Image 1 (cartoon, rainbow, N blue to C red):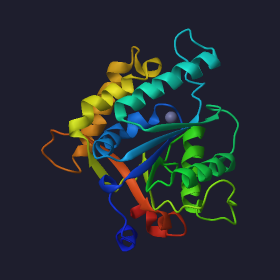
Image 2 (image 1 turned 90 degrees about the vertical axis):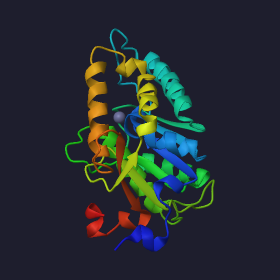
Image 3 (image 1 turned 180 degrees about the vertical axis):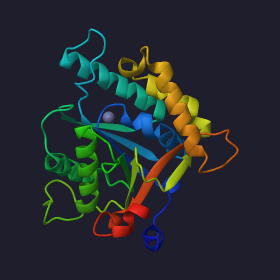
Length: 251
Ligand SMILES: [Zn+2]
């Protein structure tokens, strides 16, 4: 049973407004820059929500959290300009710090009601071996907010009317069901990643770039066997698949 088809939900390329929620200031570029570039080219509105401030991303001699936060915010905006991001919302939770899934969820419910996206992108919190607490907590908070942004009993309507987010697209997922051809955008994706100079412009970049290239090339094999393109893998689910559907893992 294809719940998305039953609900008449559009596929990823036909959505008009998306919110890409990232735990850290570079996750969107690393995972879905190509998809976002394609959506931007097709006229979709793109809102970035960055949940943590990136203060744990020290590099070289730079260990001052306030300086790290300021530099990473600038880098995120430069990368967003490359992608065509229309708006940035920063939630400012401490990178790697103490905060709860509930706190993030209630802020995201508010953002989803305010922005009314027809698709939300974020990390898959159920990726086995994901050890980073920000990725697990943010992925869970986004999932809950997609499930409950239309529910005014759990989240009373304070500032904005309730809104049902129709679907979610997880990235960094071990259970992909959708592969996006990003071949025309791959060079620009790499450009948007390296815009995060503080994180990637170092001695490991050639290895990291090789890994991204290889991963995108492997993902492309799900689209075509000709072996000349690049793709990004997503797990796209209807909101109804986020509760009590045992087959969602195979969807
Ligand atoms: Zn991250």
